[in-house]
Length: 217
Length: 330
Image 1 (spheres, each protein chain N blue to C red):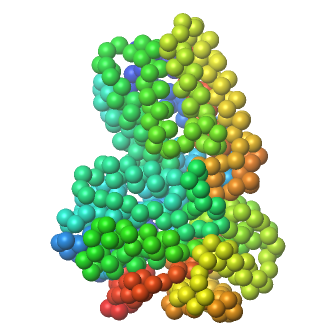
Image 2: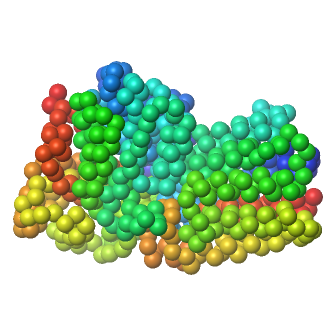
Image 3: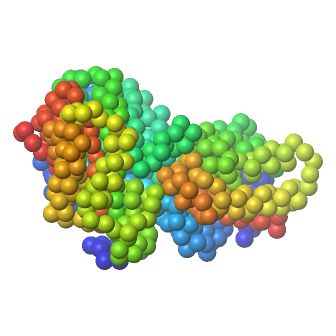
């Protein structure tokens, strides 16, 4: 698990989170692949694994760079190295995070929330998907909304993060009985029902890993 | 998994290497970022056509780069959309000043990556999206229909117009017409195996078929017991005709496409069945295409595409083409 971070968002924080996430995704790879084979074509897990590997491999190149520069390099790596919907969406996520103002100052928890919210909004725009369409956005949008609440409220951070893990899990499970209207599963009509969306599952695992590492810090 | 593979990670690169060597008279394969371009430079004032998509559909799209068709193709990993830097590099490489038209199959990943590529490219460009698959219901609230085999026809027909001086707007307009006049329906008997996965994408019984399958082995609308060819073909054509609603005696192009694992002998049998059925409905077949053009790795199965043709479409279909996978008239 995560050992050292300066502030709530830094290049080292991102790299160490990517390493944590890599372990969790690998542990759950078979399940995600099976979900994708039910309603997609099975490429999602390989795209996510390839992306994580590429980010982790960037460590030596970016560990001493300022946050904005590091985020832009991660964004281009993800964008050019993954492909598929995941590459475009996660690339957009990092690229937009890098555009958050005042990244050269110390990043407190509120600022970190703002960055993630900005990133998720850009993904929503890029993928043109909203909640209820059986995609990763079913997990990410409610998480973003909760972060927005935490950002402006005075709730205990750890309590808030714990609530986020719960929201992510509920929303991930909630994709099971949805009809898909976006993405490859949308081509299946009624047959997509009864299967959890693989993108929702991988996103939930990512959020769960990050939140738990911060809670246990 | 039984495949010709040395190392899964090198699968795409080695295949592209071979493609480049085998067709060095027509194309050049560029690496990092990966794109296939014509061997000769696009002539000045000619609109450049660029397509692309996940690999595994060969000869689409690299096999369609050359005179009278595409200027460049961007191959992604197997069944994964290519990345924006590939489209940007290809556009910069081939644009001769008349602009770039991106031809994109309607899949979320392709749409997003091509959009980003188009945003990153500073030159004049536009896109057309193909969505000919009648197995999927069309709707503005959803991803809509898939872009499948008719993409081949779009690329051939606007390739000819671009070669003969058509403007970016004219090429886009003709491409949209071809797409709108096309309908495709696919059937699979077996699954396919993505090299990185190492096992079949879906399980299917020996006596079953997937009706309305996509080109990535993604499930279709229905799983059915296999039936005689004429029954399957009739069901496929009914779905297409319901959608296209051709007039009596309307001229059409009939395209029987193999998914990769079905021999040509069977594809011609399908063509024969389709001819008989269309004839009985008073639909005139004026052009034909039979073969493996838009495949799904080693999947057994076929798709049928019907294209309603007017004079403009026929003229551009008949025009000379010289690519790795399609060649006539020159």
